[in-house]
Amino acid sequence: MKNAVELTDANFEQEVIKEDLPVLVDFWAEWCGPCRMMGPVLEKIAEKNSGKVKIGKLNVDHNPLSASNYRVTGIPTMHLFKGGEIVDTMVGAVPEGELQKMLDKHMNGAQ
Image 1 (tube, rainbow, N blue to C red):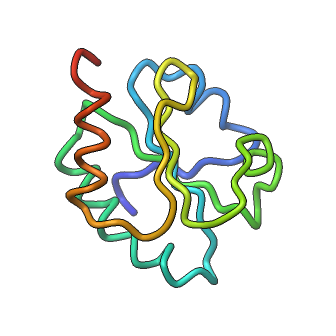
Image 2 (image 1 turned 180 degrees about the vertical axis):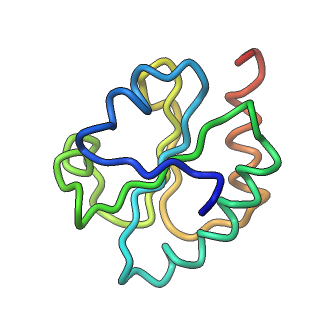
């Protein structure tokens, strides 16, 4: 994805926890069909909300520490972080409109 940051256990704190913007983190894996389905949805969300929210993708197979720290037991899991804390979560492949509603609820007053 051209509009998402690749997250790792090493850069998670800098890219997510210390970020001023809300950050939507997609916990995913290459072998996960629903995760692959979310790719284009997240790309659209990133384009629509450019400058208002940061999109990050964390491969749970390559970064088990972050997935474990945030109790990700099923994928895709999308945690929305604001001020370094999880403020909302969606699990599974969800329609673009549902994801946008979740973001809208938390982005008001973000900037």
